[in-house]
Image (cartoon, rainbow, N blue to C red; front, side, top):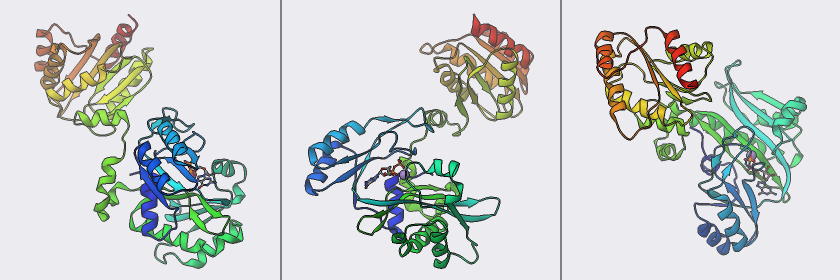
Length: 387
Ligand code: GDP
Ligand code: MN
């Protein structure tokens, strides 16, 4: 579970990592009222899961309530896009935080080094928005230290790191406490990643976590049941939400960029089907895995979901019956096509295995003629998409 910045900072405060004074808001009125009640300079920070908000225009400054209202109205509802996230993410809330006068920006994170089988702490004095470029062009500026989970975290380790990373001296006194807090957060909450970028040294000498990126392992969430509500808030992407809405798993449906809709039972058969389509000179618009043992109702919903993608010009349903029964699949297809409110596209069905004969009979009665092989089906679907 990836956390929004305001949630990550809530966890930072629990482990004693200093964060700026702030206020979480979902409306421009709320933002303006907060700034009016607390005169000063504020940062308005878009709450989205994607990184690179600064470069995407999602971080803005405001000095008075009117300015704060105007900027908040502009940010709320805006779709932020970045190189890593070209589709973008809609801003639904803002974190209003005291603007810190920055002397220096460092970077610190902890993640698992799978090769070393240990948590690794990564630090550089060149934090901020261009940290990826530091990694690419100046790898020596990045210091790493592995923590032996049995020995736990010791402050001297962090002191050594501060020197290795050549952090400005102003960081050194507080730095071990920050890393210690990050490490206990990492372990207690079962994180995949905890990251502070930038960890700021302010003009008046304070060390503050200006940003927070926390990714928790879903399998460790039982340790902190109070975070359940955060999970409900986390946005899932549209394809995932669509799959879940019809009773499938998060990764059972994926949109691609071709024009043939694909339904198969099992991810392996789905991959094979897409290869067959590719070999026949076409390409898949999407791919839906109905899983094992699908009943007619799920087949119908799956058909409707796949055909709702306007790119789909033809559809190939490729079923190899094991625990999935051919008659259930055929019934689902017939019911989907009988529904009057859904777009119809030319359809190719290949049905083999369990109850294949019954399935074929149901399709034949509805005027359909399933193909025998995957390659034949792929070829026909490609021709139908071109027509
Ligand atoms: P990100 O781009 O999504 O990582 O968002 P950050 O929270 O890291 O903010 C991006 C950049 O905005 C930071 O690297 C800072 O340069 C700037 N910034 C954020 N908060 C403050 C602040 O309180 N004061 C100042 N001067 N700059 C800030
Ligand atoms: Mn950041």
